[in-house]
Length: 192
Image 1 (tube, helix red, strand yellow):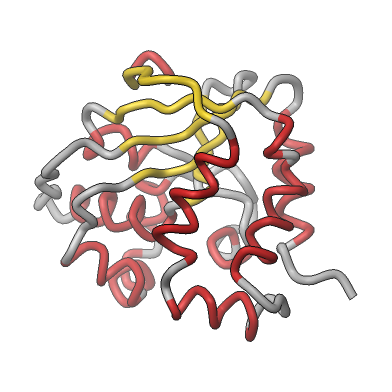
Image 2: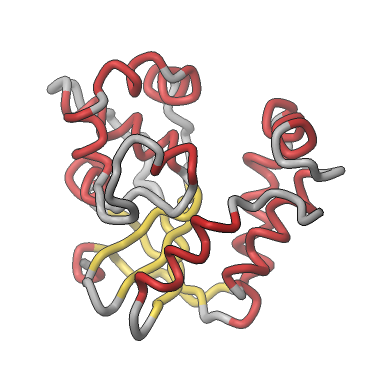
């Protein structure tokens, strides 16, 4: 799947996190979610903890351009997060195009997806995990945007991009299912 992306350059986790923070971390809705739903004092604590479970600072990150986002993004796997995995009995194996085809009404009614479908960000950077053992990309950050792209394709009205989105990726070697199961189990809630 990497051969469908254009390598731009190596990046540090701090650079990846800074883009994430500038986008999601500055949004009052996500700041409130970190406090009220996840139990953290700040967005940075919540997402920092989530990144620590992944070991993000110890991983090598590369930035890629997504040339054909309407074709490629729907094929990304849904990330290991309960809010997204709850739709299926079998976890960590379904793509966004599968989600849209099987849970169309939920996708259409989700306000985060709907908002991004109607007003896709001019510049978008996803975060993902390249699973070497499966030759698949798992979405780590950017689910609402990925679902919006997938819904638009499903409805035969693909998004017209002002510029191609990018994705910061790290390669996961070995048995990726153990890592994904572990990330799903933690739920990124503040430990008690």
